[in-house]
Length: 263
Image 1: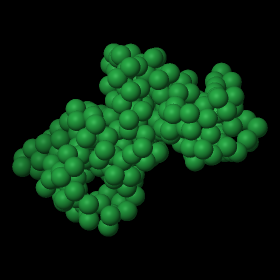
Image 2: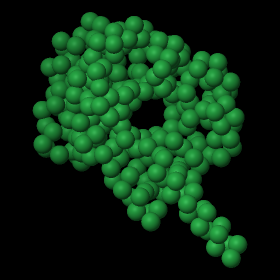
Image 3: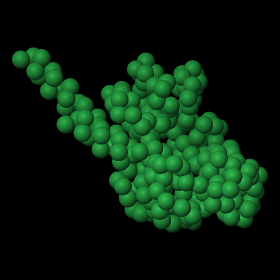
Image 4: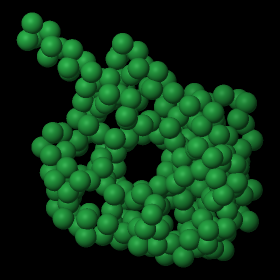
């Protein structure tokens, strides 16, 4: 009888954990639409993802563009190679974003977007997770764009630069801010600095997350997010450890499969 109660309890914990975890579309619904485009973000929200993640750079003409790589070669149709941070938006907006092999042809013809463009299509309950690719120099312009154009939805900030994400938190004290890392030793070293800088937690490569690391982070009440998980087994491992948010290229697919495994 004891074992039956234990099994029931563990199943209940699993169901609760699965319900609480959120699934964020990595660069939007990037499996189906070209990454970091308006079409990709809108599709992620329409398909029921709990949020969409994007990457931003500051251009030479003080515009904030949505783009992941340091240059444009990999993801443009003609392979034009412009260094994003050293280019103007007038140059960048001419480039057409390339479809990946899994993308639908329906989304052909997308161009590099501005962050304000994304804000303008957001609806009330939609979440945009914004990764800072530039350093803290982006923060003053980011503040102006957020204040002027964010009329609906919610945002959170993530970034590999501890200095930049700390500056974001100081500027946006009511907005969740998470430090990105793929190195366990760096995370352990920086744990005391998380609360000193009022950061809400960390966003880590799932590969480095284990119970001892989670235990240390919980000591400072840090939320733990992870990236980039497209596998049910790894997603279950994250949920069992108590990770709050899973970033994935296939948010709807993973969300549905995780719900199916919990039945």
